[in-house]
Image (cartoon, rainbow, N blue to C red; front, side, top):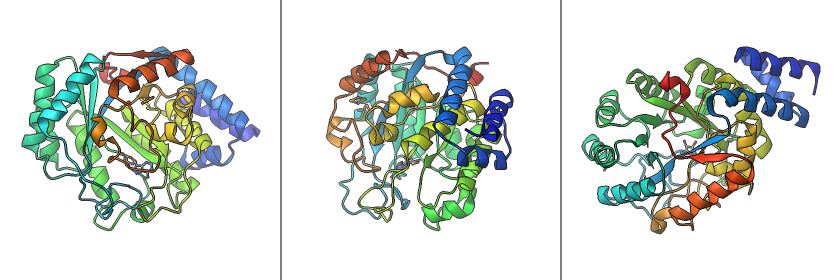
Length: 352
Ligand code: 5AD
Ligand code: FES
């Protein structure tokens, strides 16, 4: 590790802020020693807020029908080899009940941009879950919608919203998405969600096609400026039925490095060790915790549809029952000295 990198890490740990140029130098100057120092600071920064607690969010993948055609995504509209499904409201309610019985106090509803889920339908699902389980936080991850729609869903009881920004650079955004999608719209959505009082999650893939250090530096500066409650980052993994099928996957090392950096930028952020991280390495999620993450998102979707929600190849946990995933993660976290907790785990900032 160079002296310059050490100084950058110390400055970041102290001030939670670097310039875009400094973020770039921190990324380009990385080596194993720098990663270890960053992780050490990241774990220390997490300590007063969360200690070794890991928050579990039960994820229900409610639909793989999507009107969008993002170049990286396995359930893009243009992929004709996907068997499409959507879960009926009663099935979603049953999955949420099962999740509650398994101890989850956050339920995440994620899906493609499927017109079936109007504000009335999706709002009704949220209302039903909140009525059945008033102590559950409902998180939505349902893509871009209007301000009015986000407002209606908030009024229905939704607490949090995940909408990765994917990349903070407009030119890079245009290389990952067809022309009908834009970074401007994505940012409008994120601002709307924040203004409406949601706890908001942003994020991006690590090693997505055409991504440069300068792009990642912009992502980090955006994270600093936006101050999200949650931030989802995981490696890009190619899907065989997408335009990016021959692109290389993002690396474990860079993902872990960035997890530590993000923990230092927003010390109380809720930071998942993602399923994609667990997919590129069998112990990826464990390593994610040691780098500063504090959230896991086991799958609660019905077994029958899991293999149809393939955003990327070789996704883990598609053959396991919900209870198996819960038990598996308890064991995995216990094995490294972390404890899965069942409470809502609101962002420390949201609780203040
Ligand atoms: N590899 C890794 N992550 C992906 N996502 C979509 N496709 C892929 C892929 N091929 C991520 C996107 C999206 C989230 C739901 O999944 O960042 O926001
Ligand atoms: Fe699903 Fe381990 S988390 S089987």
